[in-house]
Amino acid sequence: MKKQICFILALTLLAALVAVPAFALPGSTDGYDPEPTNSDIVTLTGFYNVGTAAGVTVQVASAGGVVEGLEMSVDIDDNSATGTGGYDEITMYPDSDRLMVSYSEASDAKYYIVMLSEGSELPTSSTAIFYMDQITGAAFSNVKVYPNMPGERASLSLWIIGDDVPVRIPLGYADGSHYEKPVAGYTVLVDNKATNNNHITTVAGIVSGGAYSGNTEFTVACDIACVVAYTTNGGVSYTNLKATLVAGNEYSFTIPVNEAATVLIAYAGDINLNGTFNNQDVTMLNAANLGKRSLTAAQRALADVNYNKTFNNQDVTMLNAANLGKRSLNWEVQ
Image (cartoon, rainbow, N blue to C red):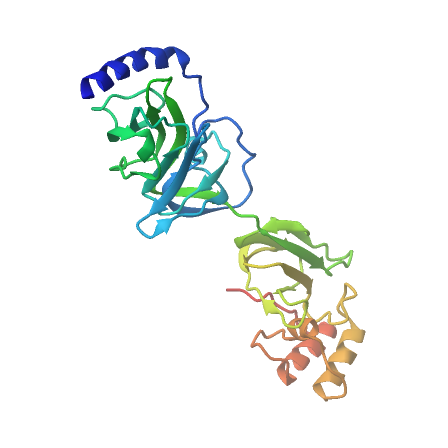
């Protein structure tokens, strides 16, 4: 019987070279999405993009059982490093290392060979990374394909070979390397209240309504001190950002964007947020210090001009002096 199988295989090899159509393998440059602004690094191991063929069912598994596929976008070819850019939309089967193959069109009276190989060329028993022969049609259900996987990312082919033209199922394998994954990002609103025409404020590196993720750096330039703070809970509380001097009147800030946020930019002491610091603010500040009125979280952030995380007499003294022109207020620097 094995001689007959070898003879059939030899004929099949010749037929397959002509009959097997071209196929865009997983990880090719076809179908890339534009590269997102933000990305993260993920570690992937396992099969991905398992193809289909008539009558063939392929289940992807690990030692723990069948692995469900996850839809994800990832630079599986490291194209960002080579400058070609773009991300593949793939179906990933995390930590998978084996396949279970069934072939409903197998004939009970025939024998079949299952092979797994790198690339798209029909392999031989010596070039395949997995080889199993003498599979009868009656037993062709959940045939276990448990290969020694290649040591690097690879485009693979699963072959079912019988009397007819070979059946090929394309798939990919990720080898546990680090790949880029785009991050959707979070919306950041910029609430710029520093609007006095005598003290023009320029914000760069962050756009209100833009999507950002992780540590995001931006700059604020103004000839008088500004307070830069952010909220992630709709203004219930604010966190002040410390400035790093860039040059002249320009300062850089870094906001850790892990959720939607609003960045407030205002002149130090401008607690009524009308775009200028004047007597109105001082009156409100004095009343608040005497307990005659309360301040919102944003107002407290703007009133704490000695940056000790509390509003008290020291801030009122500094703000009264600044309003009388006896001193200037400073940025909160690193």
